[in-house]
Length: 108
Image (tube, rainbow, N blue to C red; front, side):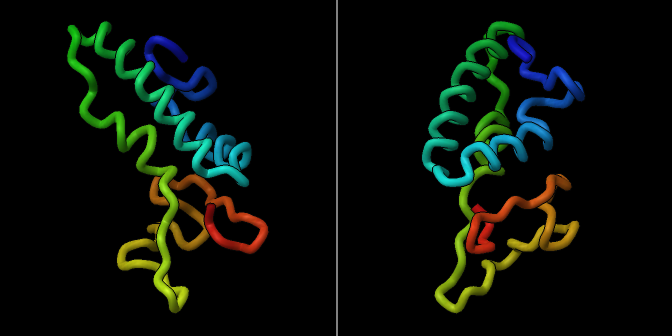
């Protein structure tokens, strides 16, 4: 995985869809800890990738590491915010990763 930050199994940029799903399951009950972990590895990846890329950090690291993991808000009526539904349906996030729900059926 390091220093290229690609998945050993599929070769996609890490965190790939399988890694995202595994992280959501692992951190199901502690979203803040997931975000702290992802922020920490994002910083490490930025430093390592910058060394490989002539000291230029990739511009998309925040979205790549944190964007998918942020909690999705809901309005008081329980409706999803505009644009919150995934293209693949309610059971997938935009990149096709299966959506993981918590015990109450809410997306973590």
